[in-house]
Image (cartoon, rainbow, N blue to C red; front, side, top):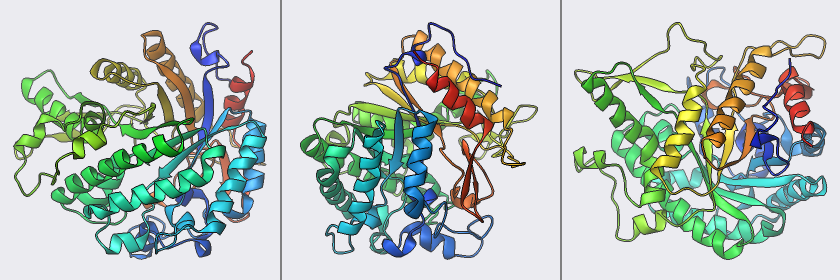
Length: 443
């Protein structure tokens, strides 16, 4: 089974960037060579991780990185998106960790030597534990600690990075980590979710100014995830509930960046829930960005709830991934078109898109036809959005390889490459082969 696109598709232009993506905690291991982070602490708590695993070894990328970048090069991708472990490059006293910086310099230099563009994310959820001990993202000072980290590492690595993203998915850090507690650090209060979101966005704005200073030649922005909400019916109540959910989960993170203000639903919050916003914060958050990274996996369906504002309806009689997420590529096109209508956007890069499937390794082969179909349908969705006038300039498959899937441990596999965690062997899945063939087919 192959991946194919119309002959006139912009995705087939050599200027369009195809890549693969990973995150530091999910693949690196190398725990002894960095500070403890909130995910180390969270994994050590009982009943937080589905298979009681942790990220101490993961895919052992810390030791196997040269083999991994050879694998990336063999796939023929244009770019590799990775994240830096804050606690690997910065010591607890705020000084630079030379050994950690050397690790990333060697990795990034190796990629550049193979003519692979480097897209680096500064924060993919692994806050150093000592900062969490002082309040984490509930403490405004963490935003300034992030600014200092961004200043140090961007100055150190400016010559080997093509693109910097400040944050990956602040929704997950704030809502999953501080509001409902299913991700690290495991706090669960609505007020915590809203306040941590504000401090994360403040950290983004502060870091953007640093990146503009240190790395004016690179493309600098942020990566947001969107799960577009659809109304369960045409009733006014369901439509209003869905609009509220979209404001709460999606536009809460994009509107401050592009319009300098939160959605109007903030006015309905009690004072205890409203985030504390200081003068000048929104202007900092709205610092112009060079690109918007969009992560998309699925949609959500909502209806009105008698005792709450909205209720999400799980998918029934619909195709789903191994995560239980509905496969609905039309929502991808719809999201990109709506973002384009809502905001004056910089170029968009699809920084994550992919799916978990139940993979079976047989004689070195993973025949994951369902994943190939998912990629086919979602690449078509991106193509349709571009045809409609959305400026999408790149697409990164999530993920390069199977890895530690946060609270689900190693029970879910998203990779284009299969990882045997016992032997650390890598096997290119049929989906990885199809993705590679598509990329190499461009003329």
